[in-house]
Length: 503
Image 1 (spheres, rainbow, N blue to C red):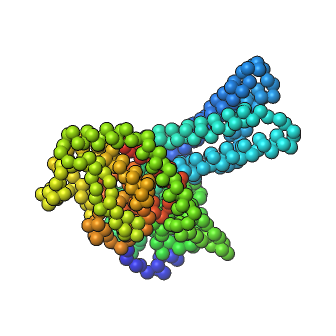
Image 2: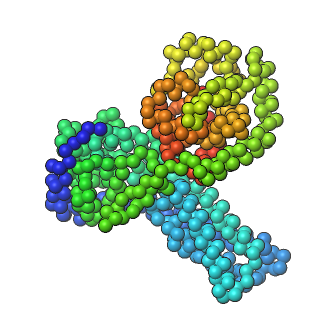
Image 3: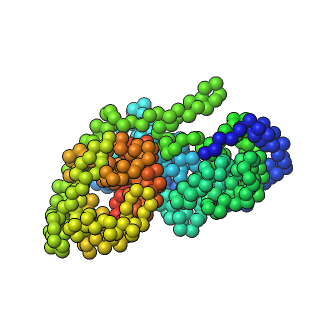
């Protein structure tokens, strides 16, 4: 990215924000913004309705299961069951489970629900102890279990419904004006257009004053609404709900403060993107020093106790999967031998952690001798970057197409997980020839074990461009956690059923 002189823009931008038309800044909320607020309010009401329904179901079920044999009228527990929805809503509210900054972000929202469950359980124990109220442990256990499970499932289903509407119809989107350099704006537009489920629709951009004036960024189909000095007017003109400021030196603290004051008057949200690439929340904390909010970034945990836990988790789950799937694996092996000559298993050298090579096991999906025919089909490559992918590869057997479509050919890699060559979740295991073509930053993928599945597999697999696949693998390396592994494994099942991007 080109370096620009920031001294001439900061004071000018601040003065522009300070002298902006006060009448326009204090105008009534725009119609589009009102629509955004309306659907957010409706979504919040649906969340509350789910929470109430779950609490009613939990209280009723616990009351019926625990006291059905003792008669239908137990005054103390009947009152507790009736008060349960109100107590549960209050607990969720205290745990910030209804705040918009957490409501649409799955892991954060679920974490708030789990915190509420823990707080609710602790509250019951505290009240029971202080007032000497004896409660049936079976009743409490059923209530707490159903509250946790029901709320997580209900909120997850509602979020998936929201994502489907965003991806299919473009509904329930937040309209955003991006402010930053042209290259950064274009990259952000492309990323948000690929991941529409985030609910961000870019409706315009404001670029640096020093750049040649453009009316439109044609490669990402976004109108240029002005320069850094025109942000407030751009927001009013296009009815934006928020402004996202990308990292650039011209927009320093004074300019951002002036912009925040102006946007505050119209209720427009302001987001500031730090100059970080794919570093998630758990690794970042705000540490104010003398009024200056500094973003502290912790190093990714690539070794230590958490990695031991991950390895143990991998081995235990892989062993269990192999035990359960052994009959099916034997059946697939027999089918491969019967439908085409050659062995059932295919071994290939791949590159693992720290560049160490290992033998990767897969079910054979191609005819014997297909690797020698690679030069014949190289012109059919449908993938960019260093990967070689052909949707209708003539070397693949008829059974092999089916095995690849549902990723059955990958299951023997469970043996690699048991041997310690791979993990259940991690970056894609590359070929040595691919690693030779890696740019410097791409080699970062090799600091952890490759995975049987990963972020790129559950985000589109072979349909993703090479740069996006690399970005997703690096995001995983930088933000690994056991909870993320569990989420990816769960999403893998959905990705396999859809079979999109598998060939």
